[in-house]
Length: 166
Image (cartoon, rainbow, N blue to C red):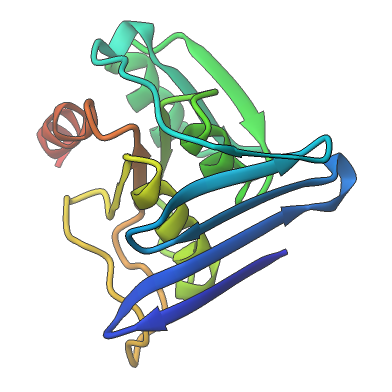
């Protein structure tokens, strides 16, 4: 379950519920990101890992393309876990992974709005795969150039490598 509030084309509130794990991720602009689990609220943040080979990547359970697999291997990341839905951003936001890459143009604004607020407040970064900032409440609701979510420290390195493929 994902809920977001968007103001001036940017998410200012994000909630992701993971009912099977009884876990909730919540963020509000300028107020931080938090995880509720085991009857406990904790402030969450991304890792400080800045070397690509040490990064943990998470990807789509059902939609990982050969291009994405090859790219992840090319940049030297060996630790890959497959997981569903918006839980990927919850994992990165809480320091359990560093990278999520997708090159699909099928993701819509509502697939990323809650995640955008949470990763931003946890200290990470979300852009498209060309490095463009994401905006919301657009006429075309599709993210045309994929999505890159990172802990922020490795974001530019991955974008630089991805641009070499074009």
